[in-house]
Length: 391
Image (spheres, rainbow, N blue to C red):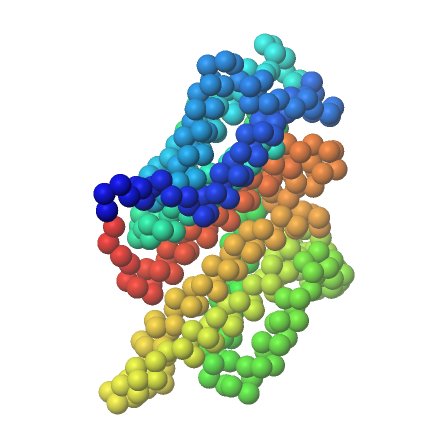
């Protein structure tokens, strides 16, 4: 660096400017929302009002540090560490804010994160995501970071640090129902993907081998994909109700007009197009030289498919499964409208009761589950396509 030249880190980071603006807006908006009970309008609390003096000063100092690191061109590792630190402080102090604002012995008061808190979380989560993208960590390190974040959140919840938050109070009142709906959500999301993979993979191979069949199958699946989810759920009610009433044994195995059956069928139908199309694309992209070499070795068509084409096309096929799984984790929420269960039960109960904390009780686990699935499957796609990278 030339004498008198300005250090690199003193320059502005383009994305950091946007992150800093979002963080500044978050700091200006209410940090928490206090309500005397779950059904009344809340009173907004600024950063200065939501925390006792010393904790408020601590949070202000941490946010200022994060603001500066985001704004300037610090190294990606520095941005990652500071981003995680700011997020950790935000989550811990949100729990402290709830304990501070809730009157002693009052079981009716509700304290929720305010718009400022969520905007600050978004800003520094964006900082962390940008740093991770720049650092290009190996798949194993990304999964380790995901596990570390999950462990930190579990520790925070186990410690009781968030017990005074309204969302946790809603959970405390509905814990058995929450875990029952969580199991239903997992069964619907993962079960529909598993069934779609068992059907879609052979169908994709058939479309790859029989080219005249390809356009017709993909066009039909594309039409299914364009039907709005709630409409498809509704369209399945009548035929499944008829099957349950007229086919012996159908009702006994759980088939009915409403409930899990139509939800599972609809999610399965939505899952087919990405899996079938990615199977076709993955097999089509296998190098002709590899196929010619296999032919030269005397391998049969079945041997070439199993030993050469499917392994080489698997990363693309797995990408389709990743798309479907993340999609279905979100779509399963709508299944609650036809009695399918899942986290959507709390979302729609909260909307009906104008209880945002109940909505969050269903929405937050859904988002977290979809994010975790995306990270894990992205890592698996990279491992299968590149053989993994050393940390």
